[in-house]
Length: 133
Image (cartoon, rainbow, N blue to C red):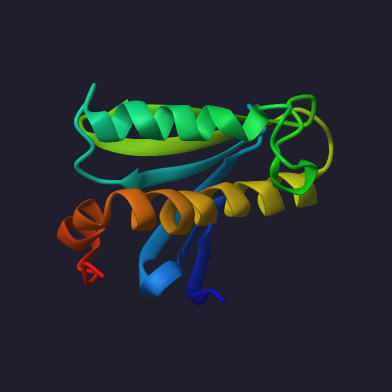
């Protein structure tokens, strides 16, 4: 599943979906997992960003199937756009790091496979050199 895994302090780097590089950091003081520089070239206020934010918020929706939902009492997800690069931060609200890691990976997986790949294949092709199929 993961390749080229490395760890420096509380920062983890690995190749994952389509062999793409990912960077995950853990801040113990704030109990936050952060996928830094997850998505490049996301213009603030763009259609992509607006729909991505709504998709991310949907992970807390009560009508989402329980196995695909984030329990807001245990984990909160936040979207940030810093100079056109999207970052996702997961605030761990309980003492279950296993739940937090599992759900953070699930969210990122669904963003790439269930949102971007289906709705924005041109973005994926342009930014991650994936074929537009």
